[in-house]
Length: 278
Ligand code: GLU
Image (cartoon, rainbow, N blue to C red; front, top):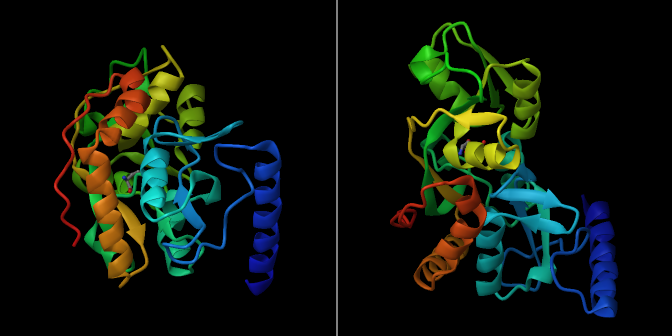
């Protein structure tokens, strides 16, 4: 661990040098790191890498609503976008990344649940999504969660989504758990699975990125309160993040980010939720 910190410090110095030399802006792929629990001059933030519109790694950096929320919070903590290191936080890895101190916080379609709150704290919520289903565009047999018996359903290990369908709707569903939603999408396209279940935000983003191939069933059947995950007991950091979220909502940046990133997916942008994690 200590060794990798040293390597990361080296990477920071290199990336900063490069950024200066190039007068660069935007996020440095290998930069940042070693965050010192907020308020310092760099932050390591966990996001998704494969969720278009939310958290996506592109050849030029990172983009999506979660990336914008993370960048806004960092700015409020006194950290420039150039000094953020984004790391991938897959659904199943989030609590561990926070508990191990590998990230300062996580902004990754991360639903606030009591089970997770036993291990980590949350700021927010900063958005409420709803669980839904994505199917192939020509499939008319799946019209809601109760029509999944005998179907192969993909979801992601460590997400809230898979278990809910299994528990509440379809006892005969053949649940396939993959590591990320991009793998589920490959399976849906090839016919290896019949549907994907997760938040409508994620599904809308995937559908928009693959026009004409998939469709949302459109029956939101849960409330997913997205929180910013952080180390348990760090109330100072949580208060600062809550203040940043509120400011982003009030100054219009919250809405314009959603319009930019989820508007093209025809997502109906809701009002910001009340912040309850205090
Ligand atoms: N919001 C849900 C969760 O936190 C599903 C999306 C995800 O896996 O990130 O589990």
